[in-house]
Image (cartoon, rainbow, N blue to C red; front, side, top):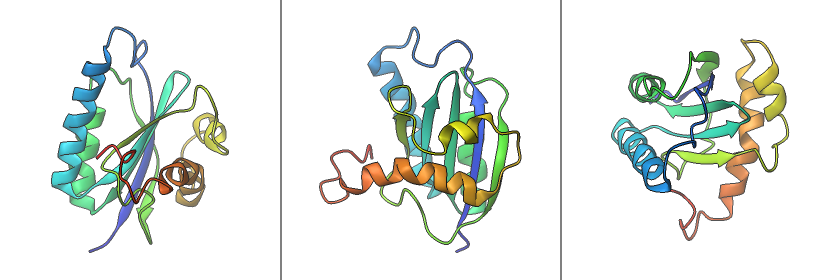
Length: 148
């Protein structure tokens, strides 16, 4: 199995959360997580201002299918791939798709990742998303916050 990652960003049309109830957001995420589980893909969606940064990791065929599903969601504007490439180990091994919100606290490196023109290096994107993954690390034993 060759593990790969893809990271991309997309502007939000309006706000992803405007007009959606918590139950609507949960159903949307459940659909993405179910597809990721079938594809063997893990990752995270990070809300940052009026954009999202999406990090997906898995085998190439699974990544293509999962990425298409998220990108085709009508709430996202045109997506822009930042980088892709081989990955030594998963950042989110216990999480089919984590939703993180940086509106309260901006993780180190995320603002630069969002503002920098594409492409960026996979290592730069990995380092920016690592801070999100580290927040989940303490929950790996209980899986209570894994959003599986």
